[in-house]
Amino acid sequence: MTLALQVRPKIISTPEYPPSRLIENVGVRPDIQVDYMTKDNLLQLGKPYVDAFTAAIVDLITKSK
Image 1 (spheres, rainbow, N blue to C red):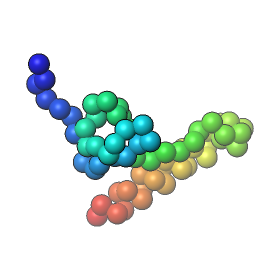
Image 2: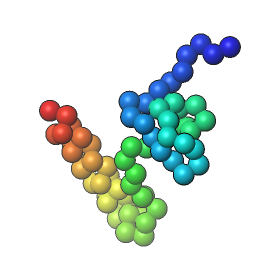
Image 3: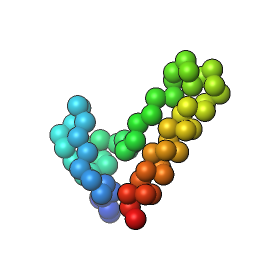
Image 4: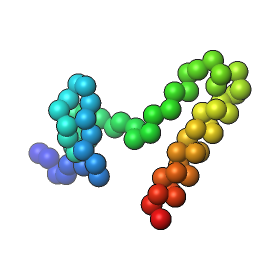
């Protein structure tokens, strides 16, 4: 028995599934993808990764105002 369905604010499209707002079957997918498994990131102890997601968050906050 289904009691509730979780939906996304935006439609997501993936290679494996048709476009959908439902989380069911598609799973949780990031809106912002930043590759952390890079040589540069590993050598700098994660600084490029932290800088990239911090910039993305600041950009989202700035756009929402």
